[in-house]
Image 1: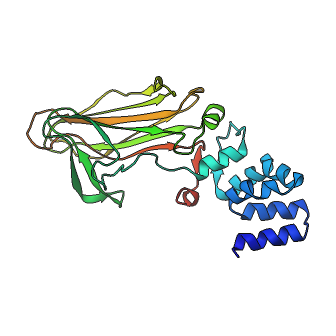
Image 2: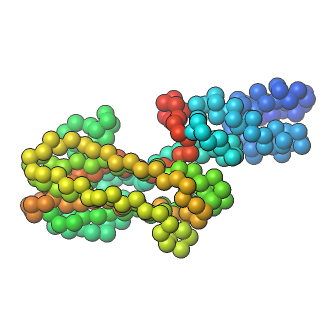
Image 3: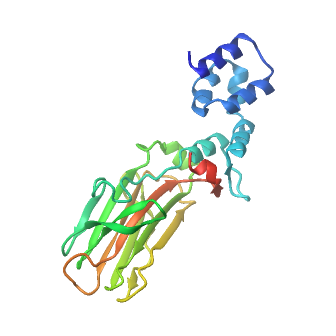
Length: 264
């Protein structure tokens, strides 16, 4: 018998004050609370559906909403924070180009290279472009990733995108990114497309980060399309163009998440 089953039998066999039941719920796996405990009786259903239970769970696990904007649905807010993850596949080139659709493959085409020193202590590889435009994309279906149309329309959690890019020191290059929120027909609802970034020859090769948060985008978002790439600006054969790695798309309604909870 599992640990959860033992607790379940004890609670059902010996009725307890709701305050004690609430404390037990706060220490059980959240999905078990919703899927199992909620079905036992009316009192337990009311407790599981209460904002107070999930507000306290968020407090204990370090999930904090914006100071000026309290969640309309604390249970949904909790699960959105708990399930926060990168929705892009193979963002750091550990698996070749798997997960990416190559939409432009100019010059000597995309290539994967290794960093002389890991970026952020863990990222060892990057994608690199050539002397003509190279672009790749991923199309994320939010419903397949567990974000229902009802949740996306009613809660409208922030969609946070991030990308890291760097030039070579000995060759000029350019970088571009375009991220689109799409409806069920894959029509554009909102777009993030900053100006292209140009690097001169003989630069410091520093890695740069671009981040953007989509919010208040309205109902209807069902897909996220992420496109990035670039080229070198001196038309050198080989792979002297912009380098990209550590790309991410996350659904995150919280203003900030504690370091401990973010690593779970």
